[in-house]
Structures are given as C-alpha cells and as structure tokens.
Length: 235
Image (tube, rainbow, N blue to C red; front, top):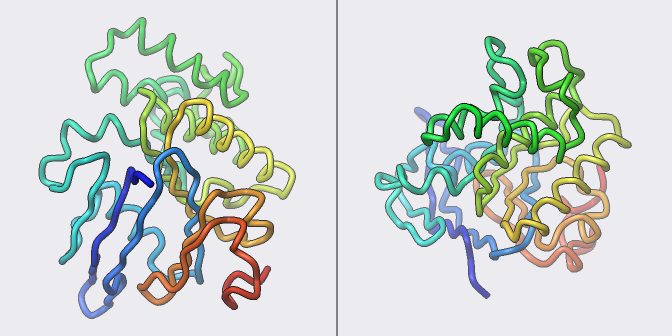
C-alpha cells in the first residue's frame, strides 16, 4: 500500500497546551480517510501540520514524497486545503477566490478565470454565483466555492477540515458525495476531518480516531463499527 501522506511521531504544543502527542498516521494513496474524534482533540492542528501551515515541534511529515517541510514551496500546488470556515476573501468575487491560487502560480488571467468557472460548475455553482461576492452566497454555496478553490490546479492530496460543518443533513450528504466523486474521478487522496461518525464505512475508505493528541484507532471504513471503539458510536 502506497501512502500520499505519513505522519511520524508528531508533537505540537502551544505554550503549556500539548495538542499533538506523538501522532503516527498513514493516509493511503487514492483513498478517502476520515479523521474523527472529540472537539478540541487536535484534529485541525493535525491537518494544518500535514499541510505545512504549522511546523511541528518534533516528528516528521512525509507528503507526496517530500520529507522536509522547509522545502515545500514547489510541493504546495500539489496540495489542496479546505478550511473549516472557508477562508474566502471578501474583497474578491467567488470566481476570483477560486482563481487566486492559479494566478499565484503564474496562470494567465484569461486561463485562470476559465478554470475557475469550470471548477465552480463542477461543484454546482453557476456563473451568477461566481460573479457574486462570497457574502452574497448561502453557507452551503460558500462551502462549495471553498472546495472549488481547494481543487484548483488539480492537486494530488486534499486536506479538508470539516467540509460539511454547519450544513443541514441533506446538503451535508450531497457535499460528501461530491467530494468522493471528485476525489475518485481525479485519482486524488483525501484526509477529511468530520464530526459526523454515522455510517463511516459507507462514506470513507479509512478512518482514524484522534483523541487527546494521539491516534487511538485506525482501520478501514468497513471496520469502523461502534463496537471497535467508543468514539465510533454515533453521537
């Protein structure tokens, strides 16, 4: 089994708060892996560390064959990140938000705009939504716009922080289905933080539980039954 992302003994503290306490995790290539666990257990810190946005105090992150986070400049276009609160720029239109990473990588303006609208169409947003500012969209539409931006440049590794947070159950299911389809159709790999532990085996290929800074269970989606670990019981 090949891995697109491997975490080796990650430790991360903020002052006296020891958030990650020796995290080891392997994310298989071409699969969707769910990261679940109690609120405040370090899931977002782990995801940001995996994305190179936070530098661990000790341990190592191997992503797409690179083992030194200090040399991740050329690697970043190959990693797409979706933040829990979307992190869209209010000063830009939706399509400009999606085109932003493409423009920063040197894509001509016309090409970046065309690719942005193509990605928005993939996530179910039309031209009118693309021309609007993020504040004019519903919460679900902003999530889709943030996903489109994470997909810009056809990244090999997707790191998605609770992409269905705040959505109603129907829209959340639709969003997850869209993510699975896009991941599989693009041959990408995804690590997805989620607070919803119901039917994990039907929604993800692999599941990892992070509790109090440590991975306490890791297995296939099919094995992620409530009897395997108390934290896999539906909330």
